[in-house]
Each structure stands twice: as structure tokens, then as C-alpha cells.
Length: 322
Ligand code: ADP
Ligand code: MG
Image 1 (cartoon, helix red, strand yellow):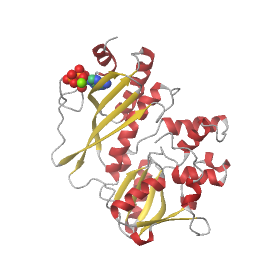
Image 2 (cartoon, helix red, strand yellow):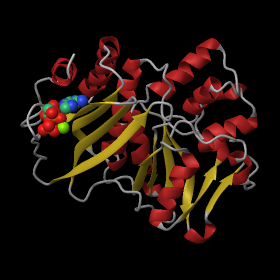
Image 3 (tube, protein in one colour):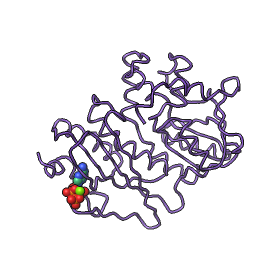
């Protein structure tokens, strides 16, 4: 199978949302009047972001999901995406499954694949997403205000549990491992939530590198501090059988959660909760925004500040999944 057969067979479908899709030198798309184009890209590299044993359908899903998560964090509505593939060989079984996982998520979000590039080499998958957001309404990392409440969607830490189980550093019951692995390999980007938070949240970021690290970006760009209450962090039932240090590591520095972390004024708390009810998505207040001089504090159940070095010390390896 040659390069162009491969593209035709797996990655070319009539565009539904854009003026011109795959096949020409450029794709053509037009954001609606009064809209800004939101663009983001993320790549997944074998051995760094996924294991060689990953189900190709899940890889197809995740490559698009992590990018849609960035659009979600900006409050943008997805329009289209580009796909850059480096493949060791044109393997039909791999490509068929990969394309199926990719298209399933693309269909779920009604988004067109409008182009890309395909070369041979070590396996890696790059996706560039494009979305639209009403001018001035994008959710930014820089908007958090002193006094805002800090919220997170879903629950945290399951993807990290799966990663540690893969590494042989903890054990999970079989059903628990399957659930954690699903969280790692099939994240659900919070696209509807991001759009619902326009004009409601003051800042937002998606959690890809772990709660404290990603919160740090918001604090830096907003020039504020924060208090996070460990006991409030939403955790899955899988977490309860783990030791306290493992739980802290997974919750605070887990990575690959793809939930949204956002801030909102306290007067908007009921409106935020209503969004969660409408979407059937758990939204939890986990702390609040303080002055920059307070830095980032994490409080344990007794209200004592936790030494944040304690759990970074738990991680002897460089993160395998970023
Ligand atoms: P060019 O030489 O103009 O860069 P290519 O030969 O690389 O074009 O690609 C031909 C067409 O196929 C282009 O429209 C390109 O966007 C599209 N394409 C290439 N690889 C992919 C892919 N992996 N997924 C979707 N479209 C692709
Ligand atoms: Mg090209």
C-alpha cells in the first residue's frame, strides 16, 4: 500500500463541516462571524506517551482526545483537525483499528479530518485541532482572581494508577486495572463543559501533567496563589485501597487526567453546579485562589500544609506519560 492509497483508504472522507477537506494543497475553513479560531497541537510518541502494546483503536482515540481537551480548556467548539503520522510500515490491521478509534471520537464531536502528512519512521501521531470561540470569550490560564473558587471536573488519579500498575509498582484487582487502563487510554475530553463555562469561569486549564503542575501554570499566568484541600479532591473508588502516599501522588501529580481545572467567583457557584447537573458531570470545589504572596498551599485533612516535596520524592522515574 503506497502513501496515497493509505490516505485514501483510511483518512479521506467527505468533509461535512468545512468548505474543503483532504486532497488539495490546503484545507479551507471559515469560522463563523464574530468567532476566533482556536488552534492547538499535541503529539504522541511511542515509548514516551504510549506503550508498543497499546490497542491501536485506543491510540487513535487518545491522539484526538488530548487535542480536543485543549480546545475544551479554551471553551472552544471543535471544527476540524489535521493528522501527522509517522509509521514504521503500512500495516492494514494497525491502520484499520487506529482509524476506527479516531473516527469514532471525531464523529462524536462532529469534527472533520481536513489534512495531514504521512511519512515512514518510528511510530508517532501528531494531531492539530481547530475550533471556534466567540471573540473575547475564550477561557484563559491568566484570568484567575483572588477570592475565586477552584473547581475540577470528574475525578483524578486513575490514569496514573494504571501507569504505576504497568510499571509493576502497585497492583490492582483485574477489574480495577481494566478501569484504570480505560482512564489512561480512553480519556473523555470535556468539550461540552468548556463551552458551558464561557462567561462563567474566570480561568481554565486541562489537566495533562498533574494537578499541582498544571495549577502552577494558572497561578503564574494569573499572578495569584492558591489553597488546595487534599480531602476535597474527587477520587475514584479504585483509589481507596491504595496507600496514602500513592493516593497523594496520583491525585496531586498524576498526569493524563484530561479533566478541566477552572476558577469561578464564589457568587457563580450555583451556576457552575447547575452546569455539572445538566452535563451529568461531577464538578468539585477543591480550594480557592489567594494572593500571589501565599504561593501554592496544599492542606491535609487536619488543615496542615503538606510538604509538596514529599510526594514528588515518591516519583523516582521521569514521567513516562506526559
Ligand atoms: P503536499 O505534497 O501538498 O504536502 P501530501 O502529498 O503530503 O500533500 O498529501 C496529500 C493530501 O493528503 C493533502 O491534502 C494532505 O493534507 C492529505 N494527507 C496527508 N496525510 C494525511 C493524513 N495522515 N490524514 C489526513 N490527510 C492527510
Ligand atoms: Mg505533505
